[in-house]
Image 1 (cartoon, one colour):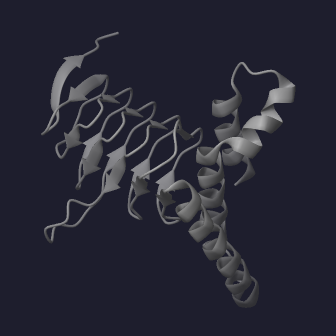
Image 2: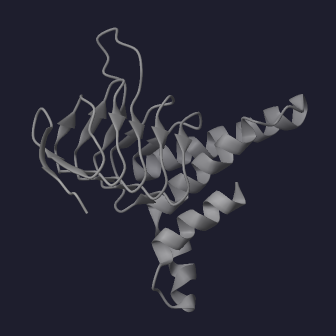
Length: 178
């Protein structure tokens, strides 16, 4: 858990003077939400019944506090790699079955989850993915590494590595070969 939190903090504090790191830890809501997610994910693996129940209660209170104050809801059952970055807070929802790679950046208003309509499955995102403001990534799809998803895009189909996706429904407008 601590290795993951350390990697998350590095994404927020890259190139920042040491004295400003405390400022970021105290005032960055995205980092709060990610830290509570990491705690909840860790708590889910505890098998000592009484300790687990007490820690789950603490997690639930923290989760609801973060959800209410920041508008970010990251289910502790999601699988999220190191270095998650949430640039702005508000209206961010990550469903429980989502799998997210390392160094993913998410802007405000993003939903990553099921398609609904009775269909099962959640997205799997690769490493180094950027998801722009208001984008929705829905359904049992695979998003490759180094993908950029534009603002307000609605993505419901697989995307290969190194692609840029925009629009409703999401369309690939570029695939970088480098």
